[in-house]
Amino acid sequence: MNAGRDMTYQGVYLRFFMHATARHGGMLLYEWILEQAKREGLAGGSVFRAIAGFGRHGVLHEEHFFELAGDLPVKVEFILREPEAERLLEIVRDSGAALVYARAPTAFGVLEPAPR
Image (cartoon, rainbow, N blue to C red):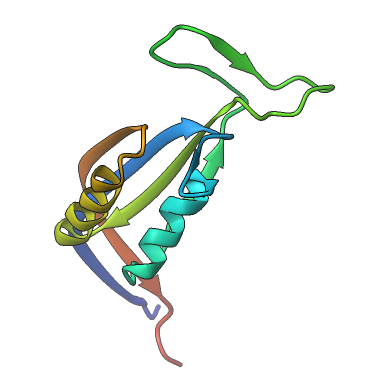
């Protein structure tokens, strides 16, 4: 069996949490963060919307069939090398955006098929 190339790296799992309707710089905050990451040349990031959640104020937000999910939490996440994570955090911090973030050390890799 031919194994593909499996390169493993050490890095940072960086997550930002905010309400789906939060705005910054004239755009949705999660879009603004993705735009900053793209501008910095980062490899990619993803946004996930919650179906329910509560934050530091203790208010429960849930998605209901007849409501728009405007006040639900969203999470923007990245897997980055340490210098990239520091730079993105610096950009967000310097912008004055109000949000919560979490970071954790991680190992990550890219699986690619073996050449035939």
